[in-house]
Image 1 (cartoon, helix red, strand yellow):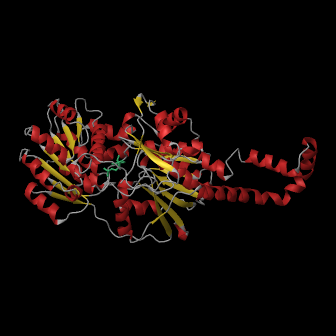
Image 2 (cartoon, rainbow, N blue to C red):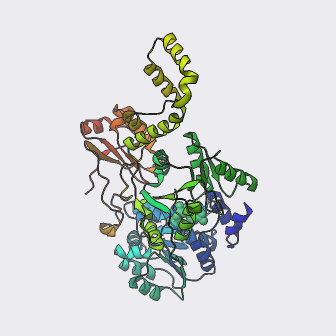
Length: 557
Ligand code: AMP
């Protein structure tokens, strides 16, 4: 809608960048983007205090893309990130935002991958280099001129880089670049060590900090659930089974996400609709009216589209994607607990977003308790309760209207009333799983335990030893072993491909396979300990998405 496109267009970014951002589904710039983009566009040095989840990547990526010259085939911008994972994420973000800028190329430079192709990509004219400091220094040792043309430098998560011991590497990198460059530093915290770097290496920097006022939220019970990004839809479906809601609003970040999630909910039989900035005003009003009078129970919205939405029936808010700042969190959850009623707010948190959760807790002055996904027993109990609630008002007079029919049917069919009642229940519940074994079987690939970090492998970059991403692994169920393959999302692998391959080639029953976690550059699968070696031998030549699976037992220690 013009109003939201105006949000980004007003920032005076190149139209092709705005077009790519709008195509990504962003409706309006987040607070850190509003403030940082004009400063970086104007060529100033800047210190931005912001953490993951605020939209900080686009806050520097968009103005930097605007400032580079696509016709020059040489490195022009360098983004330093503490970990390989973040470097890849930032590089992907740049590629997305540069989709409509022909000639712009991005290279990610990190440890654990061969140096040759990285150096070649730089020499071939990548304008944007996203690197971890350790590996970049290795490149500098081979070619000290590699950064000579860089005139924009971003230090992303600067405090994390120092924590990981990259101080000396940073000094080497600073020296390898022209002094006239623009330098932008993002950090969640600004300890003395960061201020000292800023003093030495930034010129008259502007400061951007998203001020967070303390806000109170009473009458709303808040909880959070740790979940990996690719498991959010399954997690939402599991939560809906056990949450006793009247009407519910779910918040996501993009238009596409409103559509995807709303259709996943509809497919499961929920009365759900999407609400985003592309939806015309009269249609939007229809959606809100339907939510008010019960024709709809769930609305999946972006922040922009939900503005001013006031529906007293809303008992629950699900923050499926993290809000950009505590204010919008408070704003979102204020959609429930209207008119003095009690409300419940659930927040899905990915491993990288834990810090944002802490900020929300600090600003609201409240602890947001952790909940786990419901287990099969809880799902079963909730389903039976719903069935009880829907049938109990009917039993009072059903016998007077349908009692004779029951007698006739049992006589005609030649069965007991119990058998007939059971058949009717099966029909009425549409074959829904209503015993533990069946529920276990249908449960999606979501963890019963919270994820504990999203990078349980060494990156090859030196300071990995203290890597904050290495956290305690998820405990394994008894009798299961964890196995690893080097195939991941970037090889086009999804959990269902791995599952299919292992089921087919390994001859296992579905229940024998535990959690499957697909990460960017690897995947983990839980398999039965019993007979594991034989199974791995059987799977020796298995290929998935055209590549060798090479599954190995994986021990994290
Ligand atoms: P970051 O804080 O940079 O890690 O960004 C967090 C997430 O927010 C990423 O998934 C981005 O794609 C998304 N994002 C960033 N800016 C916007 C925006 N203006 N509208 C919607 N989503 C955004």
